Image (cartoon, rainbow, N blue to C red; front, side, top):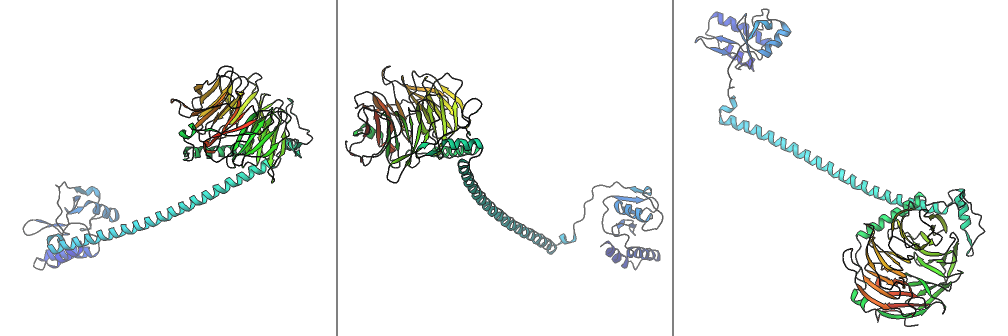
Length: 572
């Protein structure tokens, strides 16, 4: 641009003198060499003024001491470093021969395009075009980013589905592995223990159990796969409990107040009594254990006795259904535990006879997985069994206490906590995974005859000679005590219903309380007299949705209390 301006100006100098023409010719030759595209040359015209030949004002002006010419500093520095001479005169020149000039603030002249309306419109059009191109490029980038985000979200969703499927397959594999570990002996000692527990026709085979150095039987223990199974069950049940709601089919309080005896069934021998009752909700079956050494399975809707389980040599202290009602576990004063399997004809046949205790078996409780159960005995031990094999995985003795046998036991609804009551009036809470005694409750008088956890997982009810105590498991303290009878009449049974809305206790009569919280009052909403005439109610159980109450007493009769008119068998 500067070269074109210089040529135009030089071409117009036709009326000057010979000296000016020679000078212009020399300048044109220098410009054609391409050496001064950005430098400014000021020459004195006829009016004595200075003109910048290039038409541009230098930003950092400097003057040559030798020639007096004005240059742009950055350009003359580069030229001197390359050639070492003045670009105009050709004389040797160095930066020491250049002097900077101090100037005021220079306002650059307005460009030619801004000097007219058409020029300004052209400038605006150029700016608008550039803005539109930039906007178009941004929209393209936004569209590309949206496509990439959509693809990433799709990949994330697919990855989540794959992870969920893999987790499901992992859980199934773990379950199969745990089942295989339970069925396949893991060591020689385990194999011997399994062989010792094997049965033939309901009888234990000849046993040759391996003994440890302390004289006790070697147990395989609760292995990691079983602990993981218990923990998974606990997590699932805890999550369900958070979403649990009271079913509308639950018997209301006003209906409970109108309950009366619906039927009575003499299931055991005339001179015997009923010690234990359990109900299988899906099939509405009732099992009873009596002092006549028998257990009985009773169909409540039809009022028929399905099976009489004979085999124990002494009274049956505890009966418990497992899973779908096809298996029943009984504990007896003859120191044995029997596992009964239902057959196609409706009878129950003895599948296992377990002889790991050395004193009366007082209680049996089934784990929520329906794969394991615990027995408690007066020999001051409780045993953890695998149901499928009848193998005693561990036998726990609390060496910190005196010789006090266990008189009751129950699993917490989530399955990782076990509660036991002793003949020494102590309630003990155990961590099933580590078999450690993590808490104990004092305060009862006499043996703890019954123990029951509420479905909400927070409350524990225990019965003894002095009545019933309620414990808050969150703060490990007693918050309420019921003393319904005199000091000579023990409370033999206590039971929460499956919804955790009602609490029943039995002694010389049967009383039903409405469950409240720690601070509120628990009101007694119904009292049933002991119709056996012996003032010894031994077991109380709520039916499905608390639609009826099954009561066992020492007069060999099973009594059903409910709302008159409800479906059920008539008086036997």
